[in-house]
Length: 125
Image (cartoon, one colour):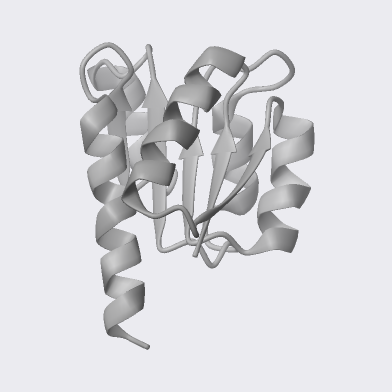
């Protein structure tokens, strides 16, 4: 299984990677800190889960959603952002996100989605 993290904060990426390792040390993690790196990375790597911040150093998570929604084989597109209020949430869901979580309170929910995708993948083996 593979998770692709699109996050410009090294601290947040490290925290997510630590949580993913606790789920299963065998989960492969790829990462980008910009939309311009993430779009080809997601389309080439075929991750099972994409965890995506909206505000990136270069580009936006919305750019990534626009480019990969419907083209990615990811079973779950998770927006994980400090900008998870209703207008952002509605727009992300309309653009193809499966979940929109707030960084300040929903860290565990992101890991629950990843765990669920891993369990589903294991059951389908």
